[in-house]
Image (cartoon, rainbow, N blue to C red; front, side, top):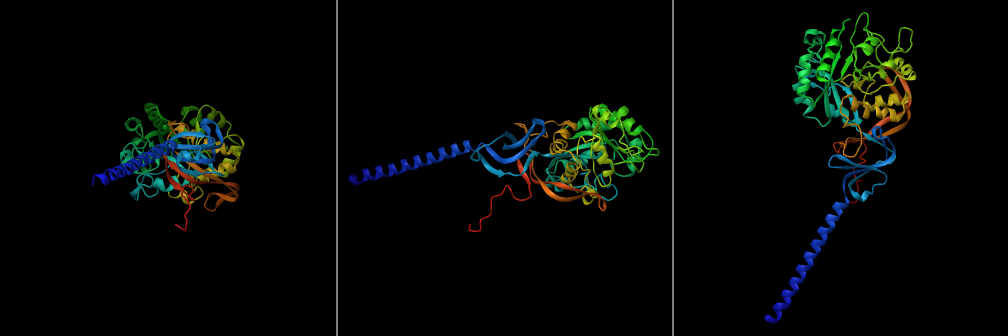
Length: 431
């Protein structure tokens, strides 16, 4: 027994030693592989447009732990767990839409404030490459908390709020109630929810009266936040020159810049069809011109001559709501496409949809692909062909050669929209 026992023991020990060595080598290889794969996702070969960092060319974008780790040329694919081939596509910071209506709810009488005409943001924003959106005026200081709990805290899209100066928000008749326009209460709520509220809005007030604007700007001063004005109707119309050159502070926002001209609102063109001469001076002093396309707040008759005169939008936005998405507005990429076809460069369009709006809402940590920034990324295509872009359903179509289409949307480093499956492996029928 002793003759055979020792060799068997030695054999078993040798096998065990080999297994330990093999396991060690396997573990070492795994560690080395994990070390080599320093990125969670690598978007390779796309044309990166990052206005803040003056990047406009073919680059790779590496993502780790929900943040941008590196933007550079020719990052090795072996260094990433997932590789997305973006050749032939564009890559930019996630789009930022600063004018939309997302206080969706079930009240049949309040439209934009917990009402039927507001949208669930994720279903509209993410498929259009929008990772950050601003709810503009649907909630006021009386019902902001309901909006926060009902929407902001429950959706994937990053949602901020521009608080209505009217306590009840955009809920119809309440918008005419000057007594409900309380700058102290609005500022108090904004200071309490500083992470969520980025400004104040006045909308749809009818009357030749500057009191609502004055109360709005008082709230802005108290909370040190910008304001947004959406004029209602007045007879005679309130003066844009007075608003821009006397009332507004630098950084305050006029939305629907290419609307107006009828219905009790002044437009960018005067009574003789000329672009108002003070508009460029207003932009120079810091007034923000926002598109706010909406269902009926954009016209080529205003936009084309204004752009030709150099009056370009600071921020491109949708004014998304239940009716506008079914009309000429359609989506953020559709609105961006209109301005691309009207003569703005692609870099200008992306700037007005990313870095500039991030600064307008005082969130400069967004809207760029700097190292360490949150990984909000839009991969998009610019299709070439013959495309029609209407102001509204059945109203004034313009033909264009270019159409922007969101291919993939990344929010906080996670893919939340992938139109054509560019992030997925090809299905193999043999497996």
